[in-house]
Image (tube, rainbow, N blue to C red):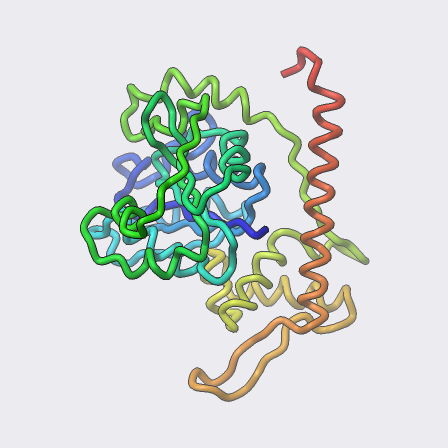
Length: 309
């Protein structure tokens, strides 16, 4: 099952100081906390909707391999506008989708896994009788959600479907704690930080030199969808020249093409991932998943009963 996520960080310069710099809570930004937990739960196709602080958000997340979608009219945008943008991007890429505003960053990896295990087309965490985030729903609902014209946001769009939401009681206050209100989160910050300890394994392929890793994976995914190297680089927050450096380095080490150009068409040409490139991408993602799973098992076996953390 392919699972994606949308993080809405465009509606206002949330988490920034007067100089527009990203403010960290503890040692991490709000978006970093959310992305880390999504990725630990095995969710890799993550769209971050940016706006006022786009450059700062991209800088803080550049190493995570997420997709950046900038909302140009963020000054007047509503939260549901960000949801629409992210869902439009993910609608043909995933079976399930999570949605979360960036100011709800303290939920845990275990909560995500619990939400994934539950039945239902719409699944919502609930803490002490309060609904929270992230919300999970079937990607098949996205076209209907995008058609919603009411004024009640994502909740109104989901309610309009006439599908009963499956509410999951969780022992995780983070699903309802708003980081935009400092008095709300100080008591939970320490608990959240204690659960962040984890193994971090960066899987890369190497021949004469390292040539294929998370950056190349994200780039190929984007090119496969957008049919443009330039647009793919833009979504990743990297330069066009860096994108081609990643591609050419991989092709030199592999000895075959992973990207080809197609001339003609309304935009004067396109780029596409070759069949061997797609096979490499599929195999690498399977390998990466198994390595991360093995690393977590070893971590828990070796460190779980120690007093080191």
